[in-house]
Image (cartoon, rainbow, N blue to C red; front, side):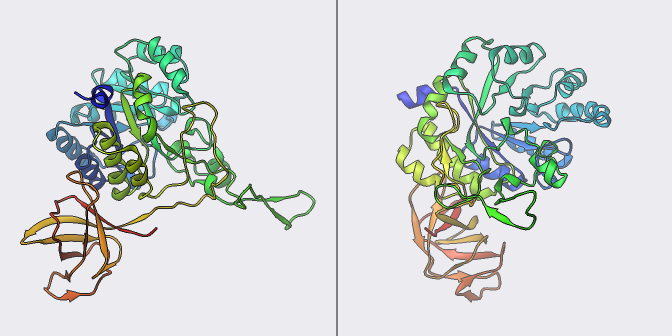
Length: 405
């Protein structure tokens, strides 16, 4: 066993999914576990929540592959939601989910009362920053704690040393970081009446702002940072690919990727990169380049090495070096493959293959045939199923992309 495998042998790669399609993608690209939102109290927009039927189907699919499924129920509960939680907890337990993620002490209590056997994970929203808080949650019945993003590697290692070994520790390793403490943000509530703590964040920390002096209404003064940008509230994205081993050595056993609102392409790209890092099948430099292919703001190492450091290059805009063009649906034989189009591509384009079976492969599109057998020069209808030819073997679930920068 290599040194790399030794470090990560007991670690879990945990990916997000906001739809059944993204769930399948996360599993295909190497997630050990997936976390989703259900039909009640999940802290993302309703579009990212699984219906009860979808959730039951998701459990069956995940377990059939020997993986785990966790369900976020991490809104802060209101009075009229407590009674509903009891039935929901029983449903989740009956469905066989492997854990439920909660933020609220009352929700934790209700979950354990209604379904004592249901494993409970404490969300990063609970702001766990020290060993005593983690210990208290463990004594209340928590199986796992998701630590606050503000903790350093040194602090995490100390917490691990001073808590029961049976208590699992999970940390975020990639994705968006909220402006406010452990993501408990009030800006959206104040500006739009939609609360991030209730799953309705309008992301005002991504907006551009001007200053208006009280006695000079209508006179707007632009706020500008060092490089001429003005997204002063927009945080960098977290990227731990270079020092993932240090996080493991600090005692973290679950590496969490942020992004239940992200596309299947994003989840595939990031999950695949971290899977390769854990398996030792690609160099760190190549994986750093790979993570540039998915949409992101400037990257940062977060607080793992102390105070958050960034270079004032954050203009609030997302960037990516590749565009998601399609997903492989079927091998039709003789070098022909059925592909579902996601973004425009044309005959003559070079498409890269994102696949857990190989890396760094690409091919030139020689032909595009629609369902009626007609030749096309361009694929331009979203989600249309088309046949293309490739000399390189493609597999169902592989993602095709085109380099744009």
